[in-house]
Length: 183
Image (cartoon, rainbow, N blue to C red; front, side):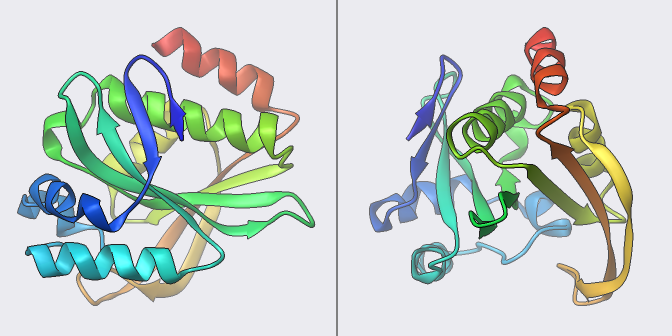
């Protein structure tokens, strides 16, 4: 579990299904994100798939301000041998968009990745068309590395290009200070 005064990231569990469905019950979330959660059974399937993935750590995002689960995020493509990880599959209820929740969540995850796991690189990707997510990634201080063309299917089924961002261990102290100054 990762937490501070604003947010708690708790390992996702089957008992979170109803809260996850409630948090994901807003069509705006799924314009650029998948898989969609439109029902309790969708939430249960989301959790089952996340828990079955042995190379990922998925968290329910609990907002202490709102006293409820407001989304999910995960570490994936974990390579402890080299020291790299991706942060993604992040979705949040619109009531916390552009709030301190996402910034605090990313600070907790990045701090864990660099200071506990001793990662060399943390990568974050977004659909090239997802300007809101791309702006949020830039706001935390990640470096834009480029576009992976025709990378995979987007949430809408179209072939998407993926914008790639990273933070490396040499940059982490300055990025951490940058994030903390925003809080």
